[in-house]
Length: 407
Ligand code: IPM
Ligand code: MG
Image (cartoon, rainbow, N blue to C red):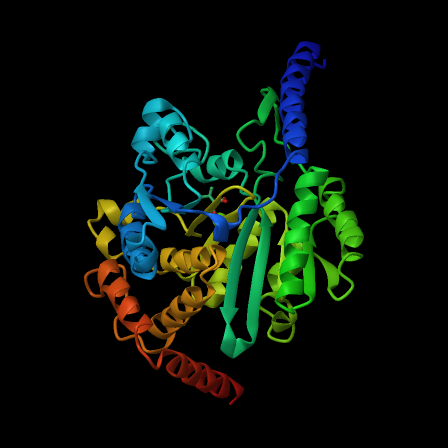
């Protein structure tokens, strides 16, 4: 016997979800122009350590950021605000993904540097509150999750444009059991949300001269929401005649990223949220691990920069949090510099990261007392940025790596 009462109850719940999503669409339609950072009297940078190793690696990254922004900070053209309150204890205390007062503080900033935050999963001791990351992306409408991955000696120069507010994440905490036997989750794609992420990918491909976008879906199975990505990409491509685009299924993409014969051909990827989450971890691993990858979460009004990895609470309980590798957070600082119009600073920091982490390795991080602390490594990076011959040194390493790879 079908449980009609359960169906009615589920319809009601579903109705509420639909109403919320349709209200969101209305807001998307009113979206304004992006912030022009060059026009701000003062740039307000929020620093939000998060929890686990977050506060440690974030503090090291903050030092690098302060070093790069020294002139602006001294001239009163930039201000750094420390925003506490995103620890798992605090979030559990108020039973909110982001406590109200913390969200209010975040909304007073233009850009945010954020350490990892613990996301309760099934089976954890914490109650099942929504991820602070996901909540921040939604609350601040940070729709584009931009994740670059580059391995020059392998010819890899990828930029991922992961849709960041919709897909399987939009209602990730709103699925439910219709009956004891039937569990349902939902996947959401709006016309506006899909269009803006595809456009962001095409814009990047055009502006960088890469002129190639790959749309990653599973539209043979997830026909409606992934199908929208495919249809809109075809339509938007007409506005970018110089940009070639193609469509790949996500399963074969996981294989092609490790195919030496194909992978260097990829340039810019546009992906729905969940595929973007998965594929960017794989891509980061090809670059040297998730600890090497930064992540920019870009909206029209706000932008947040973070590591792509989690809060590693075990490193804290084992007393070795000060040895956690801050490079992913420092990479996030480089992305922030680019975003606020400090391209030269971003370039130098990226070169210093390559030199220190991949090539010269005067200090190494092991995650334990056998290696450098995060602060020591940040110092090493700042010293490297100041080397007058940085660009030549970096180019030398790159050329040597390319040559070695050819042999
Ligand atoms: C990421 C992370 C997050 C996500 C988690 C921590 C919620 O994996 O930024 O990729 O799934 O988006
Ligand atoms: Mg992830």
